[in-house]
Image 1: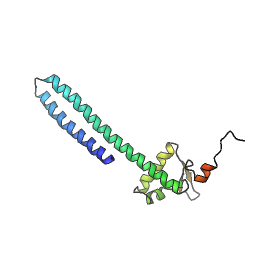
Image 2: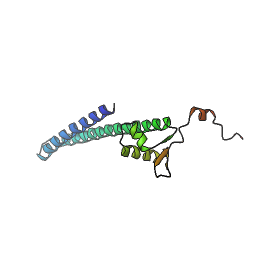
Image 3: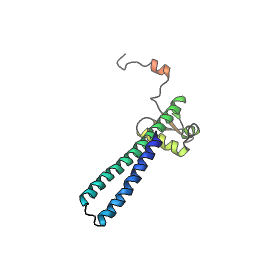
Image 4: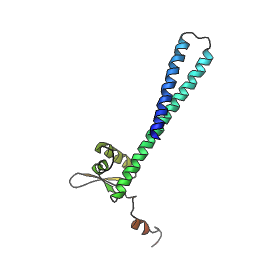
Length: 142
């Protein structure tokens, strides 16, 4: 679906830009229907912006999909993961995995820890095991 949205978005942008150039050249050439041309330029600018919006949606969906993938990998590893582990189990590079893990930490979903050897470990305390969920109690209980 993401790919389709991007293709449609780019097509709309190219289509809009093509006609914007044509109508600007008509406007510069002194066409008598200036009002109509200006209205068409406004319409085509709007459709071009809509194409950009579709691309933005597709990119956001891709990021959300990657975030879910990283969280699944972390859940399978007890809530702790390194960028190298994420890269091994996904199609991301180590650098991409680290940037994504850093972004999740910035959002408050995880915490960065450093081992004694200087390795980076990302901890996601919100990923609980079934036993931890069952043992959860109200904070009001004594």
